[in-house]
Length: 480
Image (cartoon, rainbow, N blue to C red; front, side, top):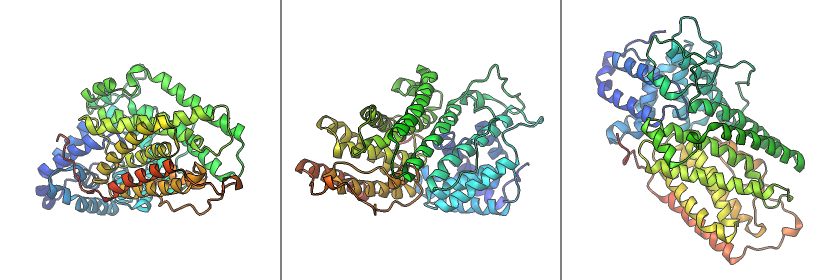
């Protein structure tokens, strides 16, 4: 459905500012937490004045966070409010533009600490995509529209997986036997023009977002495993090890099929940055290594019965958490590789919790690297918090995690339970202190050693520093 031109009262304000903020969106957000647009076509609609008002206003509200000019940045909440109001006025119009707007509004809500509103808008987007059957193309659709529909379909699938787990709610999008093909190579899609035919199967190859879709299918199984563990009083260690082995094999097979050019390295990052896909490359690897970290996380619990692969799994958890730290560091230092979308905060928190646990309970040879990694991650959290108020709540979750680790210093571990699953997956929910802290009698009476107390004081000081640091940083330091 064609969008109406912007009212003249708003057109004067938008003009150059709207184009500037749209450019910021495509630089810092596009193809990272979601993939909703064909960039050349969308920008052309902005210039022509035919762009959807709910979409444009919501996009401007999101990207104003990254503006270096204080006056433009200060208008971000106004754009968010106007975008939400425009969407509500047209909410019964089931169309692609309103799906895009719902996803943008949902992201703005989550970034501003309104997780319940985020869930509502995401559910509306998912239902609209099902009504429109975005998994299939119409005969009148050109290649750009076909691929845009696929990307919105898979965005809804990924959002449903992450957001439902993040709020501890049931999923809306079930995996079906017949699905549209996953998104194509981003460079090929970007080079397509309106009227072009869809890419033939013989010429099609998946892009980074196509790989992300396949990874999320594995992630959903990891979510299910964690939920089962949390709801089971007595674990069947053999069954759990078998489940982990199976999912590990899926992730390892996925990695082997990627080829050397898609592995995370500074050389490969430079190639993707040169193609304008540095941030998408980072988003892909943050998710990939986050899923590995989650899969092996329960093996950090040193109270668990010894298993044949327990130490190996714990070491792999630490290794992938460290790779996330390296990715975040590169994202801060390499222009064109920024990872500044909201959910990076949660990925950083989980990685930081592994590094924190390693520093508190690890071997002497692990201390320097885990402390340096934790300090580096905290830099990313301070940076992310300057754009997204919700990251403050995520930092608070790390504070609660640290507190519970310190409470268990005499027992030399923390317990993997429902509380821990909430910490790892339900990122939208506030994290309370543990109520049930029961431990075997053999642990009673133990007290932490002086070295452990010193480690706890160091980590407390590190996290306190970021809590007390300036929360307003803006996008200074990034090329416009």
